[in-house]
Length: 195
Image 1 (cartoon, one colour):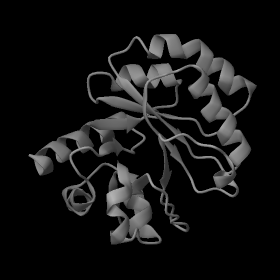
Image 2 (cartoon, rainbow, N blue to C red):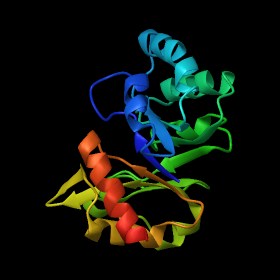
Image 3 (cartoon, one colour):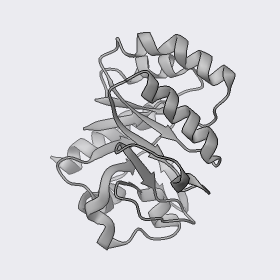
Image 4 (cartoon, rainbow, N blue to C red):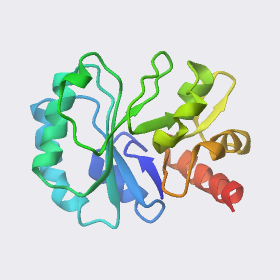
């Protein structure tokens, strides 16, 4: 399955999901902070999000485990059929009873083993390397172009080739680019390389 981040332009989750609909199978809802305003907006938008022809994952790139836990509980209490949760290996994250849909992303400076992992190719190429031995734990890949010391670019054939050995038939492939044109270009490259 191919997905994208929910930040293709500066808008709401719903506005971004409408852009993604028809291009990808799922939208990874990027929830970078947890406060009353975030909760209220998600409560307003979720009914319409669930009416779109998209599935969803949730990315919680927070540095505060208690806030990430509250956001996780919000989605769990609403019984939304999610494909995956993505957490960063923040301090104290192991102190919470995350369910079996939570995965941990490799960061540029931290690569911490968990039974479910997200392989971010930009973090892998520009920071600490993701160990080959952990490949069987990968459930999702964050795909993007990586050139000249920069990541989150439109996917290119060279970086797509680096990603290929890290995926299996069941791996979610999230185009982690933050621009609609970059998403469309990434999907074209992925289709050509994966054909």
